[in-house]
Image (tube, rainbow, N blue to C red):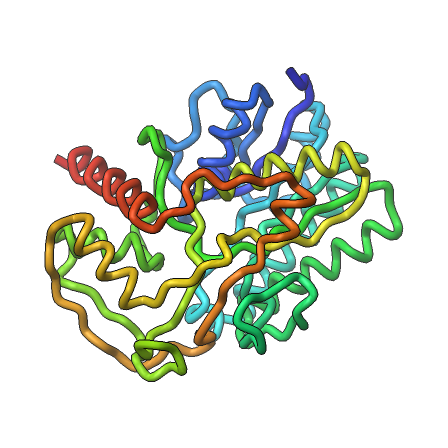
Length: 331
């Protein structure tokens, strides 16, 4: 068992809470920092040290790192809604880029050797290939994607100047929930397609909207690569092992190399749940590329990543089970 700690920012959020559990399952010792703007305090097990605050708060970070032997940082805390980033770009640059810069600064000051960054497929923009490899040009088309790419640039420069290595994991559309029901997507403001669709199936919302049916895809709706959150956090564990083993930097996609359209996802949700619901077509949202599908060759080869839940019906079943649990908890 590793006696050193792993700092997880945003560890009470959707992906971060899964990462915290995965670290515990692996015998590691996580510490969580979360401002609970979207995270849920109960998602963090009582045994895990928890700090309510901002990941860009230098005084808080100094206090944590002086009192805990932190060996690695896994940085999830960020604003993630693409459309909102076009309305509030300064807020996104402050929270996503400015806070990450402060966190990286703290890592350097406290000689923390490993940093894993939650990046995004949004750094690619509108791709010019059907399957996107990490060598594809980065040309984000919204402030969210640019805020993530800026952090990648900061990490690249910092790793040349200081004794720190990093992995930037560019992942695609995260979905599903912990297979044994310990945590899931719990934020009040749902933006993930599968969560919204299962809420519609459970009558938690009156149907759902899709944004644009005139994209250059087979059915006119956007195509995305949906990766199970459980597989995603295993990729983070693999990235941490890689950084410790290879002592090199890594930029890596995390996805299944398989895309589904919005309409296809909705049909799977209807089939798995056995419920039909209204689907309304609205105008396109700003900053939505028509197709984002990952090449995962680097992840499978360099990280030795082997997905376990690469099946859309499985992803939907886990998401539906979590949403049903939330309904019971609200009674």
